[in-house]
Picture (cartoon, rainbow, N blue to C red):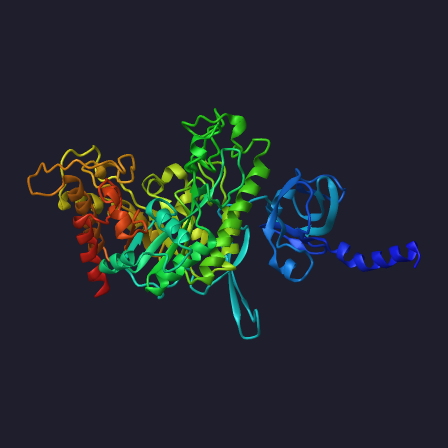
Length: 586
């Protein structure tokens, strides 16, 4: 066979593969687009940064080049045999109204400045890039089939009509029995990490969760446990969120270990709540430091960085006028969404009933801009993440908002006030470390004194929040306090954790004052819950790590130091046990 003939045969065989090694799916040629959506497609191999240029009818650039996040999962492409890997998708959140008006446009996609796809499409708008303050709905008869109808309502975040249920607010959730009888085991830290290490060292024989830990939960009548899923970033310039499961730095549960935990808890009829948690342990002390609560903050106009931050403006790409802002934000949310979908798949496969998309990152979880400071928002990115998670997960979704965003709602603007309704989340979740005193106490506060403060919190914050979110049950997704007399002033302050206790009994009743205070705080909250049925539907008591009794008692360290955990605190245990037994027998 001649060399020319062999070449011709090779090209004929490879031509179909080469022709479809990359596809621009959205926008597609001949289609019309409006509102907020995505630019997306796939490419089997990428050699450099992917960028899309959009041109008007005169082939003049209609907008700045748009960076694309590469590596999103496209299992459909892999399963069809088009690419060997599933991590071949590219995407960018995009508002078609930014292009300047109605007309025909052409999108050209480049890989490292080399064109590989293009399409010509039409854009229609409502006359401005982003319509605010509009409302309306309509019902289309005989759609999607004769005799049926579909109801659509205007959604400001997506800038378009979206399909909504016949009842505009979420309906009751019969799958959950309230109040929840819950504890939170935190993440892969403390004794939980030790338990996993011991299980690994013995060749994964026997149960992962110590039987005496299960017995302890059952003695408290617990039917819910919380687990944190840590994802990690390096510093203020790191635009990627990753799972870290390397042996030398293991802050994320390995997937197989997580599945084992979920299966074992379920086998004991204990439901699991999972929450994504951005871990800033390393980033907070990096050369370009950033705490997780600063992520998404646009910075002060004068400095270009968040208040009190030591970051230099050139190292703060959350600033809208930062030269790398658009690429950085797109990649950050792209990788965040990848992690959220990854864990959502596991949650669906393992029967997890409640899943939170984030924890105490309120500068990120804002769906609307507002005021002079909060000039940005992430409504588009959050809507996209929720949609992609719901595509693979059928359970309940929530977000764990820090209490400060509740009591100082004006500080974060409307983006936090309307978060749950804008994202149509199922549960209103709060990290509920509400201060109960104005000054640091120097004595044991009584249940009555603490309950009076909780009553104020219910009246001023929680009841109005519940009224703004009808049909969405409220749950304290984190709650607790150290066993110290000072705890009511700042219940979430961990600075005294793992300090050896000094027994003090100033009131002469034979009880440690710190542990008496902790128990009184818990009793005061539970009493206030009982006074307002249906407002607060449970609390996950924080930091009750997975542990055998042997590890917990080891050298008296875990059980013998100040901690949030109620294990080995007879007073706090008795309060929770009594309440949960009552809930169980309702």
